[in-house]
Image (tube, rainbow, N blue to C red; front, side, top):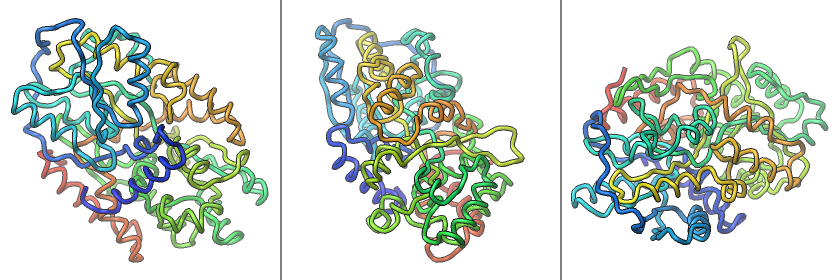
Length: 455
């Protein structure tokens, strides 16, 4: 990563979640927005996929992070005839780039590739599908039925799709919603906003009537994915294999920057990150509202902030009054890859399908499943916990279908760039609107260094 800020934030996230949630280690997931992989080779349209000689019944090697290993073990228990070697690795969380580094070594050696690999970095699809022989096998060319692929939430597989082909399956989603403390909102006599304009007006009221209380934060590494993605800001829209449009001067970028600047100036939007020790100690109990990912519910409010049950609720993503519909962003969501080099594609594909779609695993997983049927079972489990003030299922399901498709998975990290460029400027007192030019230059320079043509 370009800065210590996102890495530090992610380590705090992982440490807090690991302590609170044990082996599930939810925040290998929460921290899975973007890594910053090294430059890949020149892009090319891969030739028609030709599997290596298959050895059905042969052992498959599965690379997964610690949070996913129990799931792989559960699959192995349910399928005792399948021979599996499990290798635990970082999962490319917290800015790691282990998968690509190892694959490049295996490419040079001509052997060693895993049959299946999990990545907590939603951007890893952008390199696994490239090259003369991509690491990832095309799962929509006979490996996994279309009926299964169509069962994922709308847009969930977008980070897996390149040149019209699907190269992975999505493990989970991190769709953003509007979190709020219902107990505090009722106490203060406020209504839940439905538009960004209402949100800004409420933030102004909160600053005046209840100073110290917050309606948002702008210092998190993933703030661009919460606010600017929801505003349909074209920070990175890919138009080809290595072509990207970056335009932070677009009106849909500047409107969000101005809105946040207004609330930051008044004090109702914090410049801190929600996982800093100071924020947890001094401000967590004063969070009135917080736009953010679906994992905030259990990971942030319950396990980290320790907000008592029956207070936290979720509302639909906000929209600007002039927009026809509301969109939202996404902060995470892991990917499962079947290796194009696998000698047992049948077993590899079956494991990846089970890990992403089976209620036996996904219904009790840490975060919201990308597969719609599994999500229903998962949401039922959330309701049974009794933690939330209201059932979050309708809002989560709606938001899962509202992720704006114009924000693309790329080989560079929006989070790292925001943290190294914008966060220091904010902390020095500079308005967000005044950082957009520098921010755009930083994105453009990084994209070009990785071989992208930038418009």
